[in-house]
Length: 134
Image (cartoon, rainbow, N blue to C red; front, side, top):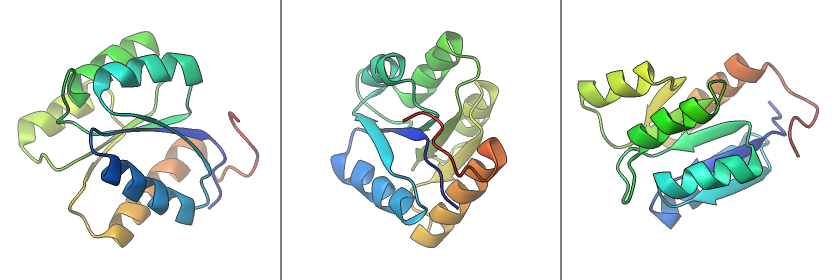
């Protein structure tokens, strides 16, 4: 798989953003922008117009569920994957209700995260070979 779209990684922990970036690079992705909380994610989204958003749930200033809700108001076509350690049913249901295309736990083994991201990207974008949004 080779995905040349721009990906916004939103997490308040820099090491998690780096970890996710490394997984995505192994999948052939190469264009990344980052945000450390939901509020910043909305600003970065509007400025950068990424093709895909990976969003944590539990963050300061604005959590990922509220950021997802606002993001989908700004762009109803936004493709957002929740990547989080929270596993309660209510959080998962809200994320899906507000339009998340997938919900992946951070404590999932790295290979399984890569597989889930690969499948999500293929499902949403097909097997993209050309640059979508440089």
